[in-house]
Length: 434
Image (cartoon, rainbow, N blue to C red; front, side):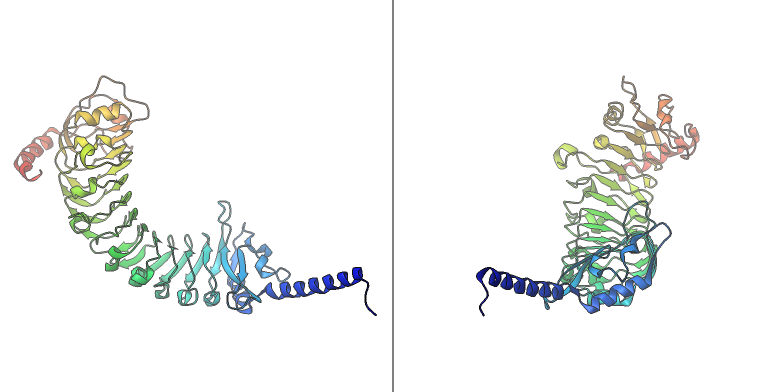
């Protein structure tokens, strides 16, 4: 017997809805390999006291609903879901993070594009095959933990990897040269700072990479500084054991024109600071302190050879062996540190005016052999930090020492016999400082 039209329509709709529901149920089943990997992650990691990240990771919850897990349909099997994003921890300032170790099965999450492990106390080695399995990775961040061992070679050549952040761990060994191969041109951000044990030299391929943010500071890297990638905007190798001249990295027009932040402090670099560094059109921070630089500062005229605006935020060449006079072109700097060198002569009037006009907020020139500071007929701004102590001059006012660091050494003038011997030495060597 035929069904009346209204009942027929109801029957058809019911069948269709049941079919769709069955298809959706099938399509929302996490691939077993991914489910197994998430179980291994849960078994290997735990919340530190005060963290509640894993509260939702229980057997009654769909794994795709776990905190930090994002699933998408499998490209090869639409009936299954794959984990595309895995974020472990909350990253909140009041969360202590996670502890434990990462399972080797993490590499079986082959659809993963983003993996973030927030700071905590996760220890042990990074799974050696992580790059072999996670070929779709775009972001890999595991900073601020206690990971040990070497950076896996398998991370080299990942076609889509944009950001690699393994900073603030306890990694050792050398930087895999494969990270900078032509097949790794997608890599733009490389952060390996504050591992302490990373050693060896910066790979030669660095200069041909497409990186724009590189932080290798606070490690044990040695060797000379190679030419920088032309794309780099932020570069730091502070607190390593690098040495040699900077001429090869910045001379003959090899300096990257977009470089905005450069930190080479606390190494063993030597020779004169290349003039080209001060002519970089985009540089706002030049941090070169605590090296073995010598010679005078050759700074091109700001108006004609350096068109960047605003001017330098920070120039720090303190704690070196720099001689010569303070260049008046540095009056454009907001915070200038030339202290603890062997500089002599009077401070340029342009620099003094910049301090008293409030344009230069910090001028540290203590522990040199400077002979004068032309004080403009202006009060020193309360915001200014000015330190001229331990030079070959009477301090022009009490304010000339008020801004000195409390651990900066003697606050009086340098002994006269040191100033006489320095004047004679500088007169004999001035021809080589130009």
